[in-house]
Length: 228
Image (cartoon, rainbow, N blue to C red; front, side, top):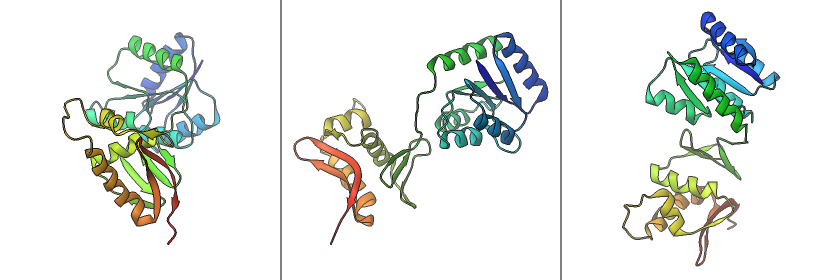
């Protein structure tokens, strides 16, 4: 098994290298983000250990570049940044795990083994349906080159439909996945949000993306143009 460690602190990088070699891994080390990106794109690694605060290209951006390139090698972020927003950013951008310094090497090695066991299934971080682009990590939505501003609930409804792209989804399924079990309102609240999404996603662009399937629910597909 081959591991890439991207860490700018030479002492920490060497400690990680020695420890992982002792665990039986072949280990490459890069001391800045651009160097790490180059190695990750050129070689077939079983896992990556990325520091966040790197020169040239930080760990978040490095991980994001790899995911954008379609590379789903497991990534463990290793950093002194322990804020919950930092952890959320790392995981949202495509990292698989997050370990903060100071850390137990025994625990880090166990997490790496777990990541490697899971392998690297293809997990696109951005959902694309036709010219509609939905990014659950940044919670942004675009129609072609145009950004579409959605409320949190509108985005949640759209994301669920997108993850079921091409399938017919009932109102009750939308309620189950977007609202919690304490919701006791009218199931037709889903219609309100579908109408709002159509006003924002379809009408301004003369598209039909969210379709009503009579008696069954809704379906999100690439959408055809509306001819007038």
